Length: 269
Image (cartoon, one colour):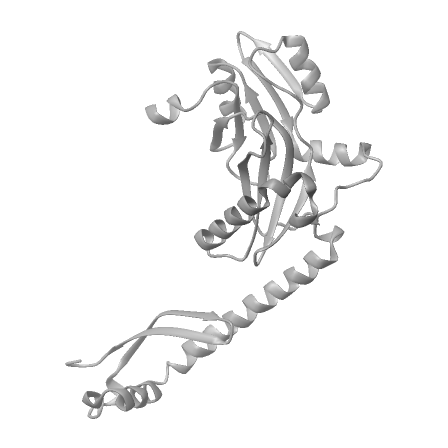
């Protein structure tokens, strides 16, 4: 962490592994606890301010069709809580609370186990995915959630991904983006529409890749490419097709249209 990053952080902090599929989480309350958490994490870790939330949702995006599923939200945890209260919070999370000079002060749990245990205890079983418009609690934020999904789709260059949003306990109609994953699949079995949209998405992806491969193969024939150039540029009329080097720079498809960028190299041109 640099000085600017450190100044933006304050205890309690959330520490988690940067790689999947490790779901170990640490909530740390002092420097020694932070050092211990980093030692226990296998590999690089992500450190962020712990946000006290009122609800947690996982958002699935499939070609800007948005579905959400409720996730278990952590109990109230703050820096001024007593050791007894933090131990009770750890018990609710099926985790462990540590407060010692050697290891520092922290709480640790497994988020995946928390989700499974919550589903087992619930009389309704696993939470089902619903369309964003059907979730009343998210109605005031639906426009902003859709905007976030659109920005991420453009930035990532993919049509299917997921992210977690945490509703802020202290700010009404406010949420934080706390995690993101590509190719979310965990809740598909509970929603037929998601399965259908995912199948269509993957079919289009395969179709477009096949088109790009076919086009790259087609431009491998120098004579065809040079004939095209002759039709557009008279200066290429005397070019020997056998002496043309063709390089495919990029190919992309959108709907029924395909764009291709190639470089043609021949002596003197």
